[in-house]
Structure formats: structure tokens, C-alpha cells
Length: 472
Image 1 (cartoon, rainbow, N blue to C red):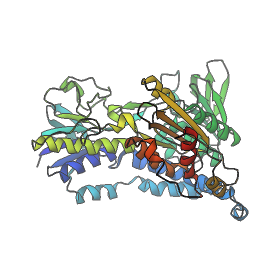
Image 2: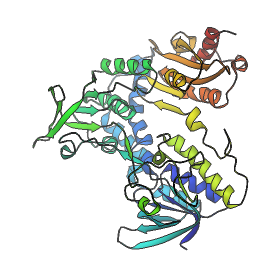
Image 3: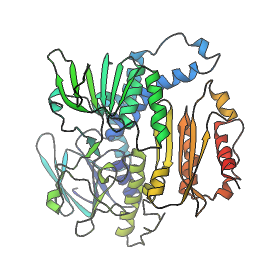
Image 4: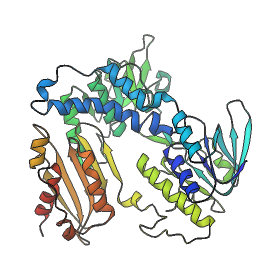
């Protein structure tokens, strides 16, 4: 069979979820993948990176509690950490993911998928054979993104690490230089410094600068405490790798830094270079612009959709899976002639992409945020009030860890009296984030939040303290 209701190009978490929703809705779907089924998140991002970071976090947590601290007699076992990382990446084997596709009734076509005409996808296998697939209703592009390598003199010839090589590294370099100050750069600087690397960060635009200002400040302080050289404003002008493998980075001010490996983590680029966009009037290599139901703009007939990183709305796995559920459901609705609910917070609209995106950065301290920063809220024209509280000033934090340091901020829309942004910084704050996400996505009035009583003694008591600071 080569004709299906829906064809999905890309079998990462987004593609898998989109195909699953289509099949659950009663249509047929096929999925195309040129690499490993499960995508970036399963093998080179979310799962293995958090496995790399978790061992160090657990050791830190033990050392922050008297009684447990005395029981810790050694340092991280690097080989054991890397073995655990490998297991979370399924040793880069996708048999388990393929089995899931089979159980869900989703045929897999391995090879490079390319759109050749309206609703037609040609799949070229590793042996050069071509299979032509036709979609009755829709094609979904879920090809994700790849690491952006900038045009710095000598950089590509020096064969730098990107997120993929860093996450899959078999050995820990003695010296690691990092170009970038975002999430990947900050998390990998944390992980490799704890694994024994001497790390230098070249953060031209600052650390985690898209977050609230105190976020980058606290992470930079923590990294420096670990011995990481955090160079805010430093910019690489040229790069060279010598015959002995040493990487030399010359900064724009003339200073030279040497390392054994260099990680480039400055952003992402869409995986749309060779998927046939030119055959439907779009530009190869471009991000795909979509409407609120993930339908690609500029393509006649309304049959092409894009979900996940490739549409540049939000480059986060969980948000891509959210889009996948929306797009799968809306394609089913349109195919069956049902009403499309694409209004604000509607079943088929990805409103959360603009209002309630949660994100955790697994540095030390952890960063957990949802919704708008104060600066973004003001830029959006909202009349806001910002309320801050020392996260350490709760009874729960004293129980949780000795010397607990953290911070909490809520951003309130004064006209509607609802929270539009929330940021937490501190040990293990990731598990506190969903409460804030519910408050933001549900637009829960502050008057009602007074009745959501936090348990004592927990760090979540900060909710009460923030409300008290705001006033009734």
C-alpha cells in the first residue's frame, strides 16, 4: 500500500505523536524517517542529556543534607555516568521505537523523504530505491532542526562538536571550550565541569539572556564556583585545530584560548534543506510559517502542515508534541467534515505556544519558567506588576537542603488579575513548574489562587508568600 490519508515526514517525538493522533482518529498514516526512529530527543537531546546531568545533581543534593553528606565518600564515576547515558539513548538503537510504531498500526518507510508534488512524497532508501507515497488528505513535515554552525573563520575545518557529538561523547575532554550561552551551552558546561573537564564558556550575548535577568546571573555564579571560566561578551573570531588535536580559538580582541574539544551551541537551523519545498513554491532550508492549526502558509490547497522545531514557534520537544496532538486532531476533523475549533484555547489551536510555554533548564541551580518574562509582557503592551520572593525564605527549603539558594518571580496582568509569567530558580524546582503552568494556561484569577493552599513544609509555600506580597 502506498496511499494513506496522512504522510508524516520525520519520526521523532513530534512525527510519532502526529501519526498516532491521526490513527486514533480513524484515518491511516505512514511515517518516513531517514535516521533513527525517535528523533533528536531520544538519542542526542532530552533523554541522554538529562541522564548526563542527573548523576551530578544527585551527588550535589546528597552533599547539601547533613547526614547524607557524611555518607558520600567519593566523586562521580565517569564511566558509570556515560553507561547510564548510553542506556537512556537506547545505545543508539531504535528497535523499541520501531516496535511501538508497529503496535500503533503506523507503517514505517525508512529513507529520505522528499515532497515531489501536491500530497506526494518520494522516499529514497539507503540502497537507492524509491517508493512513492500519496496522501489523500495531508502531509505533515516534522523534520525538526539541527545545530547551527556559524561562519567563523576555520570553524568547520576544525570539526567542532555540536550538541550531538557532545551528548554522545565516549570520553571526557580535559579542556572543553563552549561557544554560546543558551540552554545547551549552559547544561553541557554544567555536565562536563562535573565530569572533570576544565570548561571555558564564550557567551557573547550573556548567559540564558532570554530569561529573567536574575537567571543568568545565578547560573553564571554557580558555574564559576565550579571552576568554569564564564566569559560574558567574548566572541570567537577564528578557530584552528592543530595536528595534535588541540583547538585554538582566537577571540575578536586577539586573545587566544586552547582546548581539547570545542562545542558550538548558538542556535538551531531547520531541517528543510532537501525535502522538496521548491516543488510546492517554498524556499529550501527555510523555517515553515504556519497558522494556529499548523497549516503551512503559502501552499495552495491547505494540505501541507508543519509541527515541532521546523515551524520555529517553540523549539522544545514537549511543545512540539503538543502541536502534534493539535495538528493530528485538526486533520481528522477536516477529513471527516467536522467543525474546526481554532479559536483561542480551542481544541485545534496551539494557543499555549504564545501564552503558556513551560521550560526547564537543568543547570545548577535549575531554572523553571512558564509564560512571559516581565520584559516580554511589557513589550506585549500588558500593564503588569512583578512580585519577587526569596525561595530560600520558606520552611520547606531549609528542610530540602542546607544553604538552599533560590528565587521566585510572578508576573501579573493587572487588568485581568491573572498570572502571565512565572520563573523559579533553585534546587529541584523543575517539579514545581506544572502548578505555575496550570495557573498561567488556566488564567486562574489571583482571588481563586488564595484558596489553593500549599502544603507545609514544602518549597511550594512560595505561592502563599508571593500572594501575600501582592496583597488581597
